[in-house]
Length: 316
Image 1 (tube, one colour):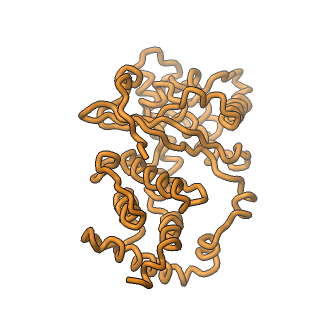
Image 2: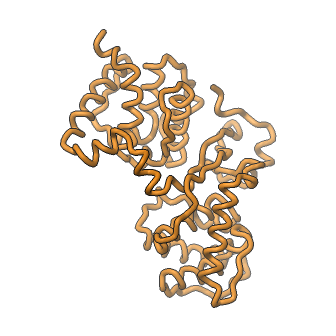
Image 3: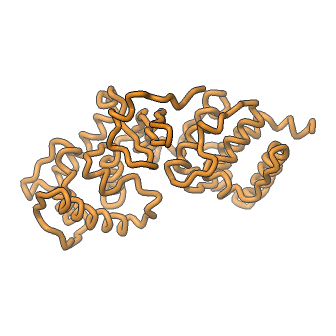
């Protein structure tokens, strides 16, 4: 499965990439996705409703929010926040400085680590729609949790990674919103019930999976002791999949020593794609949850492998 194809034109198309950083871009036809259109319309209507008394009208999320003016007014309205920034900034330098103050306050309100943020000053100022959407969704969830965001919005994006040999491009699924609470409740699986009803049994399940994993990795001289952290970068997960599924996964297709969150997400996305294509993983999984060391999600993915290959334990 060739997830990353070299592109001779990628340097021209993606000349805004920062060296060493991966960027995500909309597919050319993604703007026509009905769910994406619904989400954009929802957010535009929300902003306009919040700021109608100030006679501010937003028509385009990317074009109208990049300079920080509307974000400034929006935060003042929904968060009752006073920000010491200029009202109108014309130069690019001043706009970025203003955005920096605004986004720093947003991070403080959301209480999120920088590594978990899906936006930054450069992305918002460059009119990146993906980053702008993630920022606005986070603001709705924090300040207006009563508003029902459009559910299950996800789109396929192009991932571009600068390397020493050129640009590598691949595809990934960008998740914006999950299922509604009532829908999520009806889709709870055994792991949801385990964590809710039998938390005392979690350690038994963890140990069974650790034993299974270590038996598969013995030929690689690897040992797993902490499921919560050792699978967060996707490396051991990919090596495990290669061992039990008999896949040859070239080292050039993933980061053996991932140095950034994007690198880790790339690895985990590749692993989930392999599991999905192999029919092992049948329900969607948010790769960010694994990178953020969510134990339930990590166990759910490993258990899917365990179920298929548990007979190997009996015969070994």
